[in-house]
Length: 120
Image (cartoon, rainbow, N blue to C red; front, top):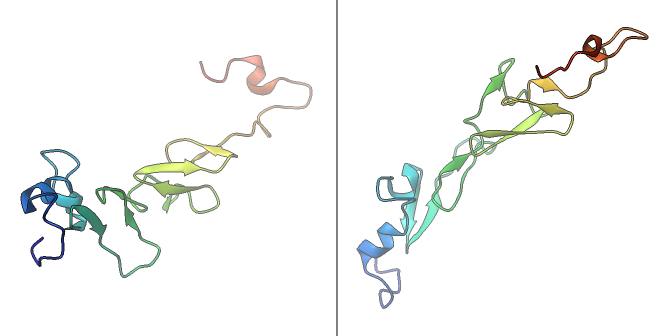
């Protein structure tokens, strides 16, 4: 390594740098970390709720779709994981904006959506 901290019997400094890239066209540690001995150490944020992670520091928990001004609709609906909203079981959609329940979708004695296929 740059500071002689790595076991160089195994790889050259250039080989170590290459192992910190997701592919040939990507930045070292996705530009969000430091390559130390061939492994990415992701940067930290001043905000402890903001995290950068992944083998190449390619993921974070704040670059997801918003619903009503909140990431993934807020903690009660879902969480942001590597650019994708992971919705709680009762919600769905790219920003956890849809309620899975059909409650309130029918009138007494009538079928949901008047018996029509909801997805057509």
